[in-house]
Length: 255
Image 1 (cartoon, rainbow, N blue to C red):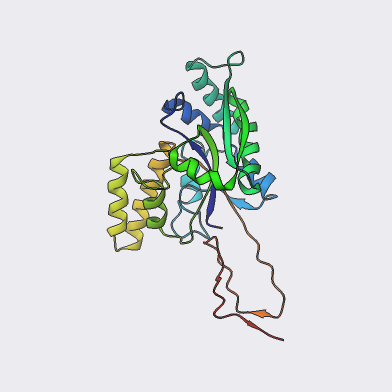
Image 2 (cartoon, rainbow, N blue to C red):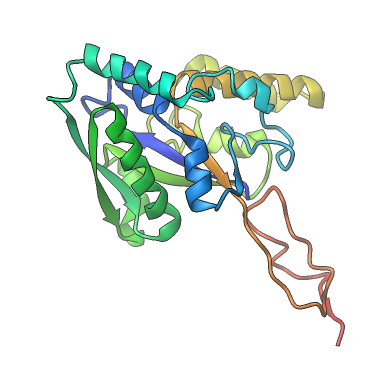
């Protein structure tokens, strides 16, 4: 499914306005553990764009592993994260307490609990704050949170749908307040590029910047399952969207 569970951090609220602190939080993420627990081993690790082979634009796995927070040595990354936290004045005897907000439904709440457990590895003690669905998105729009676990879905696997809506300066769903004008220029360039291969290179360049700057650390992409009766014919199951062909204009029943 083209929907990423991701860590959101309010960049305008101390102490999370410190980029080093946000980077430490990214480094502690064990993405495979999320997949093993939530998806029973089924899922994918990616960046802002849905990863291949389902995603057409996502960065290749070997390229992704070379970026901060994606290396396979979790212990090494967490040691580096603890060192960062210690330089900021935190440690075993001075831990950072924070509420971790999540929409009060399982796809948000369950990974938030795993996130809280992993943050403890770097001296951050999180407490889950379940938020009613009617209040969740208004709170995100107001940036009325410090740390949270969100689900970013995209109905269309296209860079414009992802970047303009979620990462451009001032975008409506740019919930973390991330803003980099040079990235905005790259977003404009990739949108104008007619050659698919050249556009893909620009998309990967944008992904790299968003990951390096901890814009909104993506944790996992889940896999959905479509069940149907054997007499249901011509139902198209999407592999790079969050929806199937819901109009059912081509579906017919063989009975």
